Each structure stands twice: as structure tokens, then as C-alpha cells.
Image 1: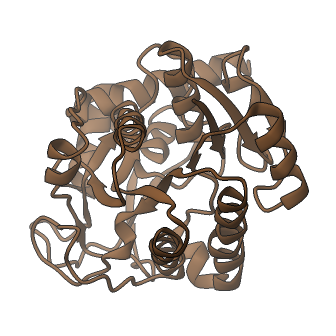
Image 2: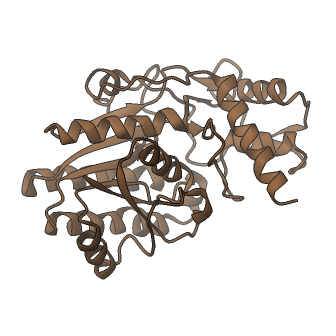
Length: 328
């Protein structure tokens, strides 16, 4: 098997490339480097710089590297930005994914793992979210990903494409070995921003709304360590290699933490009491997103090993310190 990793120089994609390196899985990265970093990849991982919707480039990559499976990470992912610029998200996420899926079908690639999102659920449910629940996204980002899930389903029925769509909850942390992490200076992830404030790189941390229907009024999310998340992708690939049929699975731990609880964890791990300010809610943000990951565990055989908020925060903070020192 030779795996194509789209968006493989980005935050999650680079962790996948390192997992492939560690497990001797042959892979190629395709990334336009708009938010990715080539120096975060293993030196022996081939990198093709280009657009995931460039059909000529895709044909060349498929043929040159004899691609047999695809993990599709490449996407725009900022919920408030999607509300302000929805057409960008439908073009970059949905339309370009359609080109990639079509190219895969034309070249006989039958195994496809897709990075979906918990944003497909919207505000429709309380408690743990199950894959079968109604999907009512509150943002164009969520809609753009849900559309791709539908495209994959239709492609399976029409062309025999087998796929796993993994619905991510809040991804955080960094490679425990310190080889890669969240390096995008414009990233909006809570734990990254809190660490930057703790390190004095930002003046304050904003809480976007404290009047949600949650115990402390702030949004609740299921934070999953990025290393556990990419291990779920390896499980999904193995599932497809063994003849698995289309599957949608949540990737989370089944435990939610509020914004204030995450802030407390960052203050405890960093040993720094930093400034926090409450501001208005962001459009498109649900009150709570917590996973029921039974399908991923039972069907894919996924077993997470880093289900601990303190560990997630510590690995993320260690990475921020490393990239800060490397710039000095």
C-alpha cells in the first residue's frame, strides 16, 4: 500500500506522516503549504507541493507513486471564518474534495479516509453525540464537511469507493516526541491560544461567551490528543484494507471540558496566572460537543492512550516552548 496524505504538512497531517514513518507505511504528502510546514515532516517522506484539486497533478502523483489509498486532511477549518466567508469554504472544502474523489475513482483507488467534524451535529442534541443523530450544522464549515460525507456515500453506491469518515472533536496536543505540533501562527485552537498567553506571546485570552446552557456558562468540548486521533486513521486504513465497507465514526473521548476548565488546566501546567477576558459569542459555535466513540472503538479497534487533559496541555505547551526557542 502507498498512501497519499492530502494536507500532510499541516497540524494533523504531519502527525499522520510521522505515524507512517514510525510504522513503515509508504506515504506521499500533497500540500499547498498555505498553512503547512515542510520542515515538520520526516525527511524521507516525499512532499508534492500543489493543490488538491489540480487534476493533472493528481494524475501524475497517482501514477508515479502507485497510490492505493488516500487520507484527506486538506481543508479550511475555522468556524467563524466560514460564517463570514461561506463560499470560500464550499469551494475549498466541498468542491475541491469532489475533484479529489472523482480523480480517485478514475484511477481505481478504492480506499479513502476523510477528515470530517463534530460540527456536522450543530446544536441538535444533549449528552454524548452518536453518529446516527440528526445532523444540523450551525456553520458553513459544518455544512461543507457534511456535503463531502454525502458525496462519499454516493460515490460508494455508484462506483464502489470504500471510505471511513472520521468526525473529529477538538484536536489538541502535540507529538509526544516533540517532532511536530500546531505551528500555524494564525491557529484559533483554545489550548494553543491559552499557551501563547501563558508564554507572554499574547496579552490576554478571550472567552467567547459565558452564557451558554452549561454548568459554568462556557462552551464544552471533547478534547482529543492529536496522536490518538492519527492512530484512529491507522485503524481506519487497516479496516479498509481488510475489506471494510463505508463507515462513519466519531473520534473523541466521551468527556467534555468547559473553556474555563481548560484555562485552569493551562494555568496549572504552565504555573502562570494569565489575563482572561469574556467577550460576546461567536456565530456558529454550539454550546457542547462530546463524542460517543463506541463505533471507532468496537468496529475500528481504536484504543486511545492519551486521554488526559493535563497530558494534552503539557505536550502542547512543550511544543510552543520548542518553536519559540527555535525562533530566538
